[in-house]
Image (cartoon, rainbow, N blue to C red):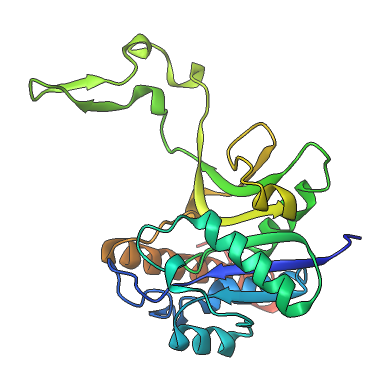
Length: 251
């Protein structure tokens, strides 16, 4: 067992610009921030699920879902240009002071991670048990080979980013993936010492593309709600088909 608390940190500042108040905007019948809070609590991994915010309304909405606000995020860490790492480091230090107990592991969970799965959180924590691992984060594969990507040329046409792969078969290209912005697990020292999130001591927790959605625009939001409805419909159909008296027959 770790010698110290295991902390979930949900950053949720009040000044979002592209989608105002998106952290508490209704999504699928509940405030957006309720989704990641619920997943964190359901996982049973954390001693405390805290919200790092400068906004009283966001703190109150997060509290409705069961999150805590043991400290106030300072204004200096709440503008549009603040990177995520200083916010995490502040939350770790503030939680240690408030609870008078060192942090052993922390997981930064983004407030718009509506499709966060409990099993993925657990897989990320399990990955940290390997001595060669400092960080674990959610990732998914690109839907098509990035080596065949195109860009605008100076003349106004198109050109390949990697022309050497013009005739390479897709199945012969290296499969690549990207960070989906759901969660970042790490031990205390790598977070506080500014360890590299994307390095040889980091492990990707692969998730399916249909649970990887970055919500930055209203168009993203609408697509995410359609995807949520798809997941709900799929879950309902699976429940019906697994119930003996309600199994669907082939038509």
